[in-house]
Image (cartoon, rainbow, N blue to C red; front, side):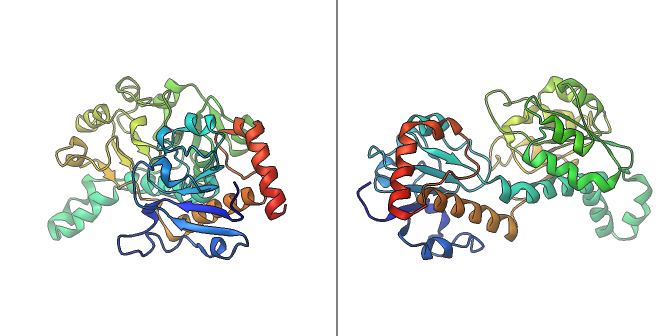
Length: 350
């Protein structure tokens, strides 16, 4: 760390091939204006290569993967700030072993993703896409209106698989709908659940009781295919499943079969097991599923919020302070991390 500058790398996918910003709502001016800080865009490599990062103190990462071979040998890299809350593209164990803090942006996505869940819920229960199609049929479509009655939400049960940052926000937004709230989360904050009027229930009970079931948990080895054929079989035939988290949490083949056989009423999916899906993927051929390309929450405010959170995290580290949103918090108690912060604090001020 002999360089007098605090050097920040941005993964190459933050720029288009012509050099323009991929997401103009990500305001980079605070980085450009920060005293003692130098910002550089990397070449677009996926996964990132270690030799690209040897001379950097911080990395802001979009969609490119950061794997074990991405860890620079110099030992200089102190923080990887992921643009979003999902970090399945980052080798957390490799980061921890190298004393690198992995930061995510829960504040930036909380409201936009929760709004996406509500959007799916209203579109599914109101049969929005079906009624759009009816309207385009003209008089014949209008004659079919009575055959496609929507589902009212008052007194229905909204369930969430997870009641963390986003799951809790979904319940806050859904409060005016006068629904019953249930959730399953082994790590739930019981005080938060009580404040939101959410009943914490067992996993199977969640699937049995929910009229609308939203997936709001991270993808881990324990949650992969947590929404399985067996659990889908517990759901009401009138129930809807929504997934805005990660595709592999849901066994997509099992879900497609349940939808095809009308064993559940429908689904709203912003994420899929394979992205993009194959052209012949069964999920694309169903009329009771609404799909989005892992982008329903992508708004100007979401990307501005994610960017601002990453920028703030990087600048906090530059000044020797602990950033918010650290995933691998054990790094923060390591001597390597403490020594790095002490150097940064001495060089750039606290």
